Image (cartoon, rainbow, N blue to C red; front, side, top):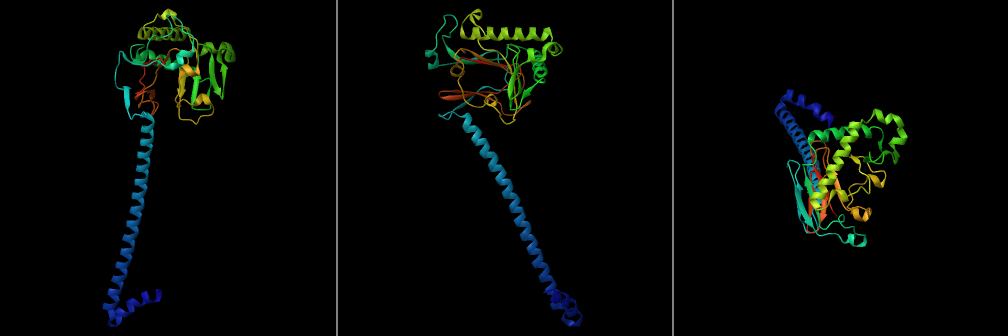
Amino acid sequence: MAPQRRAGPKAAESGGGSAGTWADRGERRRLSSVRKSRAHQESRRKWLKVAFLVSSAVLVSLLSWSYLVSEDGVAEVLAHYSESLQDRFIEVPCSEDYDSHKRFEGCTPRKCGRGITDAVITREEAERIRRIAERGLSLGGSDGGASILDLHSGALSVGKHFVNLYRYFGDKIQEVFTEEDFQLYRDVRRRIQQTIAQAFGISSSSMYLTKPTFFSRINSTEAKTTHDEYWHPHIDKVTYGSFDYTSLLYLSDYTEDFGGGRFVFMDVGANRTVEPRAASGEFTLL
């Protein structure tokens, strides 16, 4: 084929130029058609690639949504991150898990429900408490996605284990936390207890910390131990029999500081989600 292409110009010089010219035009048209075909195929490949990614994104969204939606197909937002809530409480049937545990008058709840409020601490206090948590967690940190700092008991995540930071670091701990830090921590803890007592109609003097309070820092690192797996459905009363009330106080903002991380109450008839907001807190009786 190559010698024939080179013969084209000679044909033109001998009077067969017209035939040679049309041959060149035909060749150019063929090459142009090939290029257009290839461009179309390449464009189609790119379109298919984009379509695949979009489909994947939709699939992920559907999978995420199916987890949030209850068996009855209902999902409710109990608290939106843009809302400012003084008090919101939804009463739910008490769990049968209480029937197998001893009841204490004035402490064991007479009603059950989920509540959320922004009235426990200010955003300025939330920022101060967050800085306390960050300083403490900088001393260690989990190999997995969830790190724990417990000022009450001294537990600190280090690798795959926990250490007592007061014994582990000794007097050096005074360079990390001040007395004002501990005073703020105790004050906030007291306010949380008072909020729970008011919501469930009991005396705050009847409430005791049967399990420690702690800070949690959660990221997307792969879980290394069961302590890192915060995403599984669970019931605190089953896991810890001494738990009657559970509370969470958020120190960061959903969509601004992190993505995902919504809290889901999996109730009969509806899943109720909470979108975390710094200085907001939720409390529940399971």
